[in-house]
Image (tube, rainbow, N blue to C red; front, top):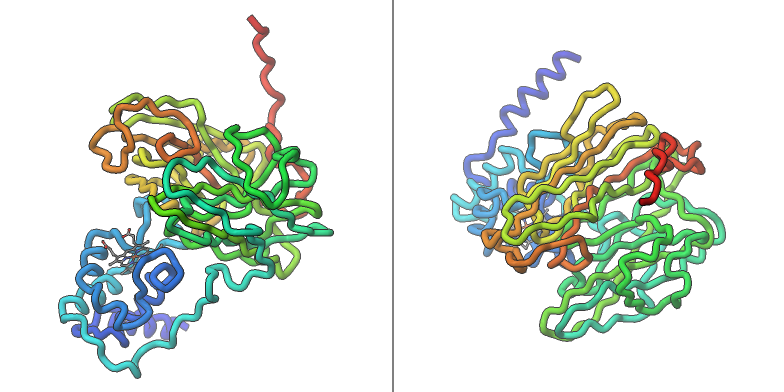
Length: 426
Ligand code: HEC
């Protein structure tokens, strides 16, 4: 056994270093397959495909730049706090392979040495969905102006409760779909109950208070997350889906037909999943402020396990941090994103799920840059408050939590202690 381990380490040392004269087929393609093709293939987020030598060769210099500047693959965690299962960063060997290849004038090499093509399910990143729910017809997005959030209520027609492993939102037209959230509306929820099914609903009201929960979301450049065996989300019989669409106009009239692919759990789940949001709606960012702090806090009411984190802000987002303070008093940084980038709404999947005992406090701390130095800032002279549109702001620390499936009917989010008596009205 020991001998085997030693041999493995030894050969990794020899093989691991970047080859002196790497070629595309033998050395570069395996790196592109594992770290780049998830987005760099037709139909996905990136505008250029790296499936072939011919497709990749013209971008050799740009690849060098993107790798040196760490612009690609995109990622926001600081590399110090937390370990993430979906960390896409290149290893030192992968990096030096790509750089040495570009330096050697990007030779093709021998196609016979190419690895087998990586297999993708056409049009999906979570594998083949069992059910696809689409908007009934294409929505017409005007050439100009602001499109308020538009919602579509779509029936699921489940006659019994179903367990969902994962789901993926596919925008029909990335040029105008800014982001999408697909919610589940429980049969008992009053949310949008008076509104028609299968038709665009444009309501200015931020929320009418009805219960809903999160199924999946789309934001540019962010791959959907494959399911984890044993973990599932319950959708009750009689539930509907609500697509919440944020369209942005781009000078040309356009149409969009967005769909959601649902993968059912293949076995009875051991753990139930839900998405939480630790948020703050009460802030006002002063004009010109270059590092305005906003915080939010949530006390975990029942023991549950955290599996991923998704920080969310808009164009003035500067940095974002999650901390957990455990009942022992110990504090830990779960995720630190030092340079938040609105263009990449990453989900950080914890390499080791974290048990959060009841009474753990999750603090999220963010800063906003409302100064003219922020090149994405739509208006440094504005005082900015919470709102849907991208010139308004948000501050939400999303996360997915799981708990034992035997407690599927327990209200895990009811406050732990009785609420403090209210101050008498004045
Ligand atoms: C999560 C999706 C994603 C992954 C993974 C990804 N890219 Fe990209 N890439 C994009 C998108 C989207 C763009 C275009 C928008 C932009 O430039 O930000 C892009 C642009 C680029 C560009 C053009 C940059 C420029 O400045 O014009 C290069 C070169 C590139 N990627 C290389 C890579 C390489 C090499 C990898 C793997 C090591 C990789 N990308 C992985 C999504 C991705």
